[in-house]
Amino acid sequence: MSTHTAPASLGTPEKQITLPFSKAWEISMKSIKIRLGRSLITASGIMLGIAFFSSVRTVVLFPITQTGAAAEAARSRHSFLAIMALLVCFVGIMNSMLMSVTERFREIGTMKCLGALDQFIVTLFIIEAGIMGLFGSMIGWFLGWLIMVIPHMFGGGAHDLNRAFFGGSLAQAAQSVAIGLVITLIACIPTARSAAKMPPAAALRSEI
Amino acid sequence: MAANEYVVRTKGLVKEFRMGEESVRALNGVDLDIKRGEYLSIMGPSGSGKSTLFNAIGGLDKPDSGSVFINDVDMAQLDARELAYLRCHTIGYIFQTFNLLPSMTALENVTLPTVFAGLTTDDGIERGIEVLNLVGLGHRLHHRPTQLSGGQQQRVAIARALANNPSIVLADEPTGNLDLKTGEEIIALLRELNKKQGVTIISATHDYKMVDVSDRVVWIRDGKIAKIEERADIELAVGTIKDETAH
Ligand SMILES: Nc1ncnc2c1ncn2[C@@H]1O[C@H](COP(=O)(O)OP(=O)(O)O)[C@@H](O)[C@H]1O
Ligand SMILES: [Mg+2]
Image (cartoon, rainbow over all chains, first blue to last red; front, side):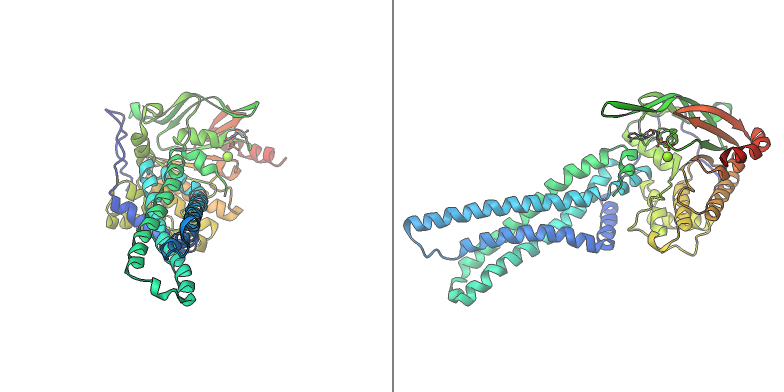
């Protein structure tokens, strides 16, 4: 058992290998599953932001009853709301992602002690964030949509839910998910990258 | 053997921490040669620079000046990949706070370094079980850290440190969070691994129980080595040390 490999004092020191993506995927899945409660909270942050955005966007799909200047005003109010929703979304997602990376500084430091490369750690976080961003955004879009559609239906607008409406909804769903995913990754990648770059001692020192 | 007599050498290590106007010299010129296979304790009061030295030797933080040689390789010359290889294969780390990954079972924690070393899942699990048995935790493979006592968690951490068969195990206050009896068991285990596996153990501590098992004790104070005692001196002095500490 005590067959230690000869010290690498001759020639160049050996280099750490790059692990296949499947290993990162495996570890990320385990991590999401085991901290399911925490993952759900992070994903809800994303979900709520996107639900707000989606609800504002869905309204645009209903036929505009006003004409002329009033219609113009309604349109610009919607654009304003959509931008506000995006901002809220951005801040909300940023906050949950920052928290979810920061609370794991020690874990990052530990993994580096065990031989993880910085890029591997970043990959882990991208996978986790990507999955939470994807599902959070999909559910968020649906919730926001439902919240607008149900009252509209019962308010006598069922006939507005035509092919054009569903076509538009589908396009918006894709847009919401894309936006949610992009914001999640924008929030996650720089944070994870700077955390992974920290000297392990600094990462391990952080108390949370 | 002669060329490799020393597994770790440090030369003129200096590390300063600046906090606003003030600066603390945590290490102030540390020269230390550590022999292959020895059990070395780094003793000193809290704040004397033990953890800073631990971090420098383990490649967890860079010194401001001076060098650390591991197996005659200057750590400052290593790139990120070589440093990761060193942390993965050559050094095993043990911490006061165990630092197990809370989302993983004992076996998964111990297997993780084998994943980074590129072992297959099956080989990793086999190795994980082997080292967990070695530390007496073969019956707790699938427990999570929160389901284990402090002493058991530290055993998992020791098993994890040994997973890739390192030549050095670095420990920072390994008994600091344990009660007296559990601390003694952990010290005995480290000593046994040192004897049986031939692994060099370097342990920063202010636990005087550690002195009894050490081949050498390095006393550090204010970032400097105050004195180095050999096993023979220690045996003579053990009584006096214990008296000194009773103050
Ligand atoms: N990250 C840090 N920032 C500022 N000061 C630090 C830091 N780490 C250690 N120090 C200071 O350096 C000195 C040595 O600390 P340390 O090596 O942790 O001592 P020990 O482990 O022996 O208790 C102490 O005065 C401590 O306050
Ligand atoms: Mg310390």
